[in-house]
Every structure is written in structure tokens, then in C-alpha cells.
Image (tube, rainbow, N blue to C red; front, side, top):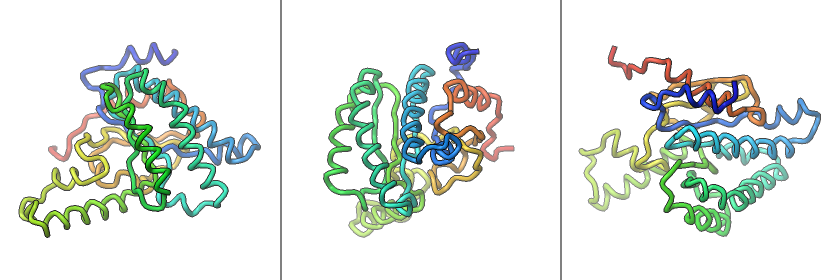
Amino acid sequence: MNYKQLIENIDKERMPKHIAIIMDGNGRWADAQNTNRINGHKQGVLAVRRIVETAVEAGLEYLTVYAFSTENWRRSKKEVNYLLKLIMDSLVKEIDDLIANNVIIRFIGSKEELEKNYNKKVLNTCKSSWKNTGLHLNVAMNYGGRRELIDAFKLMSDDIISGKISKNLINDEMISNYLYTAYMPDPDLIIRTSGEERLSNFLVWQSAYSEFWFTKTLWPDFSRQEFIQSILDFQERKRRFGSR
């Protein structure tokens, strides 16, 4: 069954609003293909494109992809520099198609470590899509869940000291609104490829009630059909949120 036929089986009333993906396995894909890691990352970009296109066709509202973590700086300088360039080049190359497909794109994560010109170019490129009304695509770039919480608490502390907010009013919703994902729904479904079954510092706060879907498929091989199947499997689950 092709993915378009699978999409027809989706119950629109039970469609997840937000799906987040830990795109794991580019390096192992490259090893399996007896090629270098750079080619694995190139194929990973192609996988992002087809999953974004499929998300648009399925009517998804929010999609967040884990592109570069705060821990990825530990990799070799050559690989890090290549990844940064690949992410930027892909954004610039794809922005017109994203706009044509009514996609709103934002990069979420820390601005630290990244050069000012890099951050400025990302922002200016993304801004051209912000009048769109379709899929919200979040690219988690220089992102770490713990770093996000630290940044949020620093901002909140400043606002408490200035009198903008009262510490007595702090609750879940207020904390959420200080995160990189402020005013976005938490992910209903988190997908991780490559067979690993952990969060790896991704959306630590937001994932409290997320459903998880793991696959042994390496990210470059992750198909449209498997993405839709993850949604169909999600729709078979009963989410209780601790009520019973």
C-alpha cells in the first residue's frame, strides 16, 4: 500500500497536532553503505524533505525535527562544520518550496556557540515564511532540553526581579511560555529512528505526556509509509494522562 492510500486511513478527528522526530542513524547508514558520514547526512536531508512533504499532505499542524544538539559539538570539527553548512544550505535551497507549500519554518534552540551572521541569516530566511498558515516546521538547532530549561528559568528570574511576574503565579503554562516552543502545543507523538529508545535531551519538559514510537529504520531510509504508519498506530492508543 502506498503512502497516499495510508493517508486515507487517518482519522482526522484523532490526528496528532504535533509530532517530533529524533532523526537518528545517518552515521550508521553511511557505515552500512560503505561510504563516509557526510553522505549519510546528505541522505538525511532528503529524508527530512519527504517527511515534511508527507506531513503537509496528512494535514499535520506542527512538526519538530532534531537537527543539531548541544552535544553534537563534541564531534570532529570537520563533521560539525559540514553539518552547520549543510543545514544552512538546505534551508536556503528549500525555503521557496516551503513557502509554496504554506509551511512556516522556525529554528528553535540556543543562539550561543553559533556565529551572529549564521543566526541572522537563519532568522531572515525563516521570516519570509511567517505569513504562511499551514504546517509549522521547527528545526531544533543547537538544541538541548536542559539548556532550554536553564534559559527559560533565567528569563523568568529576570521578570520576577523586575516585577513583571509574581513567583506565586508560576505554573506549568507559564513555564511552557518561556521555552523555545512557547505557545506551541506539546508533542503528542515522538518518533525515534535507528532502534535507540531514549530522548537524548530532546524536548525534556514538553514530552511529559507524549506517546513514543520507535523504529529500527535508519533515518535516511525512513519512508513516507512508515511515517503515516506511526500516526495510524498513535490513533490506536488510549491516552489517559493519569486519569485512570
